Image 1: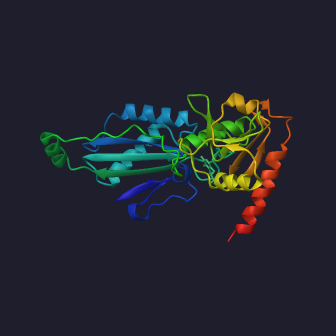
Image 2: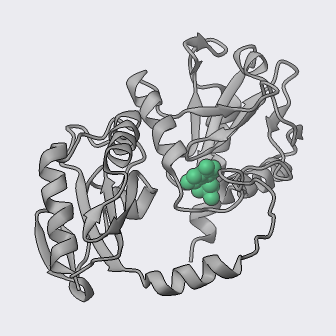
Image 3: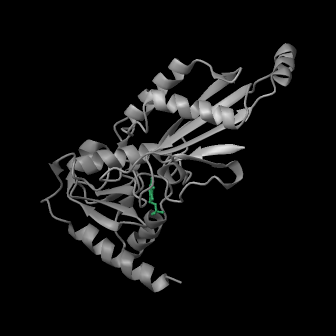
Length: 285
Ligand code: PLP
């Protein structure tokens, strides 16, 4: 078998993509699958239209024209001697140092194509017999508690932040409550002077920095409530900050353009950053 990888056909068993391909690290890519009948692409126009739509929605450049792609897909079918089967195409945003936001300047999208045979006799026998299904809850994109590499929504959110000159994007749920950042947990010091961060029963990532900081806060005897806050509460807060292994404790002075407090890092966030770093340094192994 042969696979097409970024411009050339290679042996399927040796086909590989770079470890910093954004598809591998962030699920930042799209795919299409065509059925192959008699060595030809089925529903070709529909699959191409959806491919362009998916790429455009993610602002990934078209790797080649429809005409050129048709040639390569047919070549994949031919080289793999597929008469009855399927052809798979994957396009990712490309290879770049890991960062949720899009590479700037953009890099060429990465393209992989594979083709495989399907035994139509077996498929027909299955169809003739009739098959069964089971039901599962609709949880797609709903398991934010898992530190999954399915980071496409996070990558798109971080890109919005970058485009607005912000370091982070805060996700807001249907109740208007902040859940967490694209790669950090969200905190405020509310108008009453209480530290607030969303509880982890709700569907957010259990930040390790968040958890350590709660210990620091307890040791310092500061008032804290694991309660979610609205965007309005954040804008009216005395202070705001984010936590994560990448940012540690990072003061936030603007939310959607609105100034927090006096527009400078507040005393609580500044102190917590120092205390967190001291504690983490002392306990590092
Ligand atoms: N929330 C999300 C969605 C994250 O991706 C991260 C870290 O990358 C965090 C929170 C913070 O977690 P931690 O403190 O364990 O780095």
